[in-house]
Length: 197
Image (cartoon, rainbow, N blue to C red; front, side, top):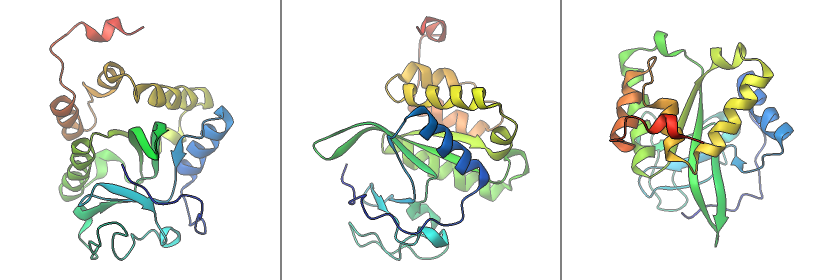
């Protein structure tokens, strides 16, 4: 996986309180394997620092393949809240996932927005990335210990597919997400979840 030099971070834009809480929790845990203010190009399947992050807009074009990101064509790119990873080998990130903080709760989303989200999730799955979805409301009402435990689980899940299935295989709130997890991370072992140590 190619990536842009991460040393030059643009001015920090307006971020939600929920995003700030997640980042602070990660920092308190001493976890540094995450990136903020990134864009992902679904055409060339690369990601890098978003020079327009302070406006919450994507770059005008992909710096890697030159694909133009026209307004309204959101299936061409993504602006994940967090890109997380397990390690870097020879300049490439390994075992990658995204944490997506939803500003609009799942039960209030329009059918169009739900379908758009599902298409983005599928593109991440096609790239071999894991997707972790958490609504604002869940962060707002979570005790610090609960959010800490969830984030620790998320990072452990990067290298344990069984744990990922245990988290999302029977997702209730977002059926389309559940269907994608079952499609890209299937299991024939119905007792597998009880075997996680």
